[in-house]
Amino acid sequence: MNAVVVGAGLTGLYELYRLREAGLSVQLFEAGGGVAGTWYWNRYPGCCFDSESEIYSYSFSDELLQEWSWKHHYSLQPDNERYYNYVCDRFDLWPHIRLNTEVVGADWDEATGEWTVRVGGGEQVQTRYLVLAVGILSAPARFIPAIPGAGETGSGAFQGEAYHTSNWPLEEVTVAGRKVAVIGSGSSGVQITPILAAQADQLTSFQRTPTYCAPLRNAPVSEATQQEWKSDYQGILDEAKANPRGYRYNPDPRKAMEVERGERWETYERLWQRPGFAKWMENFHDITSDPAASADYTEFVRGKIRERISSPAVAEKLVPKDHPFGAKRLPMESGYYEAFAQDNVALVDVKEDPIEAIEAGGVRTVSGFHEADLIVYATGFDSVTGGMTRIDIRGVGGQTLKEAWSEGPRGYLNLMTEGFPNMFTAVPRAFCNYPRCAELVAEWVADCIYAMEARGARSIVPTVEAEDAWQARIEALAQGLIFEKADSWFNGGNIPGKKRTFMLFPGSLPQYREAITEAAAADYDGFVVA
Ligand code: NA7
Image 1 (tube, rainbow, N blue to C red):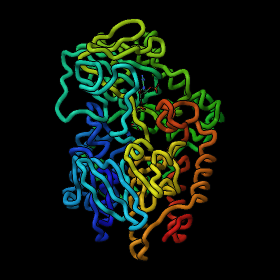
Image 2: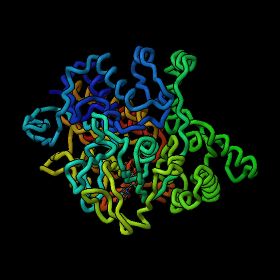
Image 3: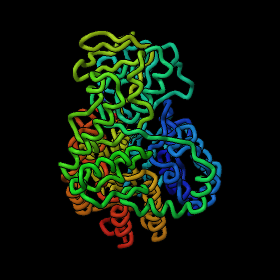
Image 4: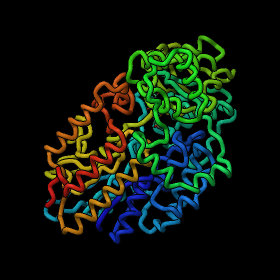
């Protein structure tokens, strides 16, 4: 086998396509029962894109761009899952995909220059290259807090149904007439809450840290817009590829505080009315970097939250106070704040009233007991590293990836790690609209494999020096960024005991593209090719 790809999400499927097109023998293993990665696992009600659908499209095939029509501007999970299935049908990828097959480990054999990949059930596969395309927020690395009695259905103290949002069942979950507890209020909790609140008998939201949420303003795509996209799809995607963040938003070049207050707040208001991330990414360019501008816009957003909540006491609980706007990824919502005006919805601030235990019949907090038939853990992920370190990967000398990354993810270009030859950490990490980095990474990996095969190389691995220089570059770029002001999956601060370090490449998408392209063009500078 030339290559094993782990994960049938958007990176893994494209990787498979590229390697198969080059005539290599390639096998993709996927733990889930279907393809689509994130859009397979996160099938909870309300799950959708928060990037615009047209720029979430694969760009590699003009035919695909013409054939597929997104139904919503922020496409809904069932359609997203259909899209990746369509891609597998369209490009005949199925013969290379094994579903329900978890990769549990991989061992590097120095003598043969190959990986032995271990899959669940005891089977072993030899491969020259190992491509970990497991995603930055990998479902198997979902996080359930260590609250006594906590766990998914059947595994904790709770006698009812309990699901993590990224491990939502294929079967419909009954919500009507039930008492529901939602723990967590990041993007997933914010998306699922209003949908469940509309059906449940009672919904209690257990919130630890409120986040700044902004209206998504989703809508169906009209026929005219569909045609407009299709008349210049590559032009749209080229624009996103050239953009610092992989979107089609461009920041206002003016400094916020140099604009007179009336005009400044009118600008905020105009952006707030727009769909998607415009209120963040089309804003004044210094809105999160200049302290006065950050404080000003944060106050505007707090006001937008307050005006949607009728009870001032509830509003004060939902308004973030301990971090500025932009310090965490911005959850996009549809009716989240309005849900708290419903009689059947309650909010528990767990900083004020901590959860003591999950018990057979519900959630016990210090001040009382909250009965539940259904518990939803919207509690996030051991991001970036978790999806890879949970696999028992053993490189040169038997060193595990988990040990190598105990102080945070190490590697060169975020793509390969010293001590783990021929292993690609194909987990897109530019801080941008995900597919735009995913395609870039999949192409880089495929090109590297073709180059190594063409020269008859046995192995490629980065040098320690290249890794150190890359790490220093990441740390320098991350210095002073607003993300330091909150704990989140961006910096590992969401997982107790995880080393706090910026998990993504903090520069722009074009800077990342330039760095990885240059290293390849310079005959794989920074790598040892043997
Ligand atoms: P997030 O954004 O990591 O949110 C997880 C939420 O779970 C967040 O509100 C956490 O509160 C909460 N949490 C975590 N541990 C606990 C405990 N022990 N008690 C109560 N609440 C807890 O994950 P999502 O799935 O929502 O979103 C991930 C990404 O997916 C998102 O950024 C988009 O890119 C799509 P905290 O803030 O840590 O106090």
